[in-house]
Length: 154
Image (cartoon, rainbow, N blue to C red; front, side, top):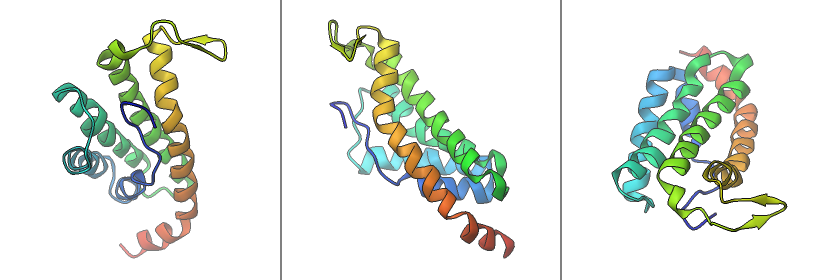
């Protein structure tokens, strides 16, 4: 999406399924491992260890918070949304701490000046997290009944 990363894809869906079926601990743990693997094998972009920890390990670990409503079929969309918001929050923190030096000084678009690291981080991360959130919520809503049947077997 941008110079420093962010992509629109389905990678969070398996993490949501794990969190939804097994709870927060397994969800967060799976996300932490996935984030590290994605960074190391998937060609992750990072500015040192703090960037790798925030943008990959902790961001995908935060997706596991979707396990708060473990096996509650009525809450699959809500729990997916919570996981997406948690990931966005980690990326936002990374944007205002690590990537703040990349904020343009005099860029104005649609009436918003991006010289403020907070606004820049919100806009930059929302560009890819908003579509990812919509994709994840829709896919998980479509998986509601298959997951319900699967959960009844265990």
